[in-house]
Length: 191
Image (cartoon, rainbow, N blue to C red; front, side, top):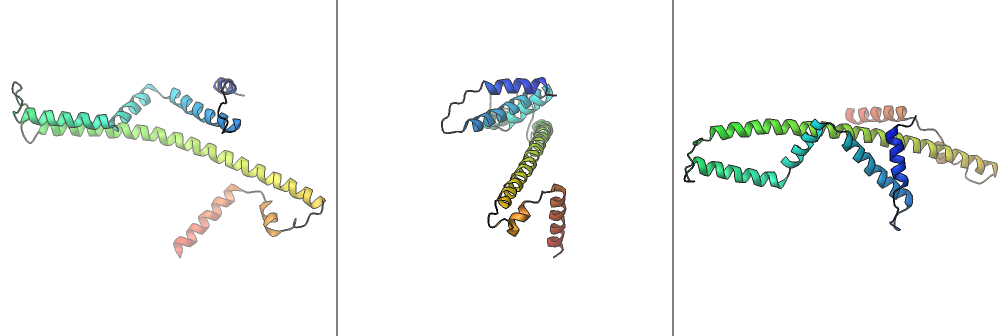
């Protein structure tokens, strides 16, 4: 059964204006589907994920770097007694500044890891989708090749028994491919 979200996405896709004559309509629909999937994933983020992403995005910006440069400069100037009217509160070697920066680093690194974990989970979902589509495409291509070869054999077209074509007609078994790859990696590592 198709979920409400998928029905809504289909309706939106049907309304997409296909306006780039350089691109096939199917490609434009695919682009819009990808964008809609990303917008949907963004909407599903929890409040905590949105906050973590916002802080992570800001902390990875030049504005963050400039703000820290100004903050450190002011801190040092104040605590060296170079700004009149403001009494130093953290004399050299700036122990309080060191503690504040250390705490900030702990929180920022945790927020970055939270955002990276969420991004990794999204990447895993996309990789799974890619694998499913690739496997379906391989299966479809194999079936089409088998049908074409049946037609070619029926019409007695030359080259139908070419060894490479016969090999390509075999259904690909992903588990067997993975086993073979693992076995060959062992052989290379053992050499």
